[in-house]
Image (tube, rainbow, N blue to C red; front, side):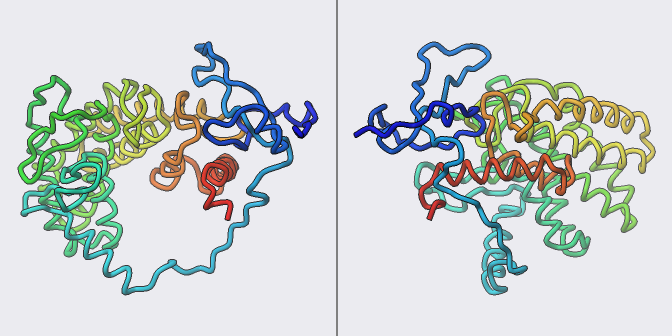
Length: 349
């Protein structure tokens, strides 16, 4: 017998619905579970391009996840031996054959296709993490960071046979840095900000250790090349962090721009290029002013066509665009935690 659900308990906004069904469920089976049924529209609208989903959802006040409890014992979650093992693998993927490239996966036969490539985005994040793991101590990071800088300078000088600006090409061949021309989501516009961000952090370390001449003579030009793209093209269309959807306004990408331009305004003032620093500061303010539009009142969206996305959490932790204690961060974490709980049965266990 089909369970009846009070209509008022099904009057829930899309942002608050928890998926009750599964692929292929119909109305009778949905309602037999005591859940709400609302068919997806066949005709999508510009205002709602994703239609009315999910269509089988729990009534208000019900969820398979209950009250999510967050507990932490204060530890890392793994012991030193495990950390050392993982660090050795991490370190081995940096500066391939001494040419500065970073490999995503070290074998050529990864299931689903080889990942033996240098991704611009991933490499920028990797080298920032590399410095953080060594507490920005120059003696520990100098060799590989300078090798990475040489790599960036080389690939900035490549020509993309497909006509894209090489600064936003997603990945490069290893070990020599030729432009990857196979099928992939292009362009990936967060790369110049992430890459320049890592090199700016390195530049600050060098200046603190008496190497300002190297920064001015070598690093500044490489950094400015990437940032010039950001200054002129920050609102252009590109692919998301997961290389699945396209937009002109990703929270992740714009947060990365704000972060790198903030570093720029400080670094270039420090080395006497106040004009470029001013351009960075002004553009940073313009981009920062757009981030508030991602707030729905319940959570921060990644983009209009990919609202709930872990990339937003990644942006919170990577770029400090909002204080981690901000109410918007907490509410977003709550919404995404519930989303992932509802999406995957293992999380409900």
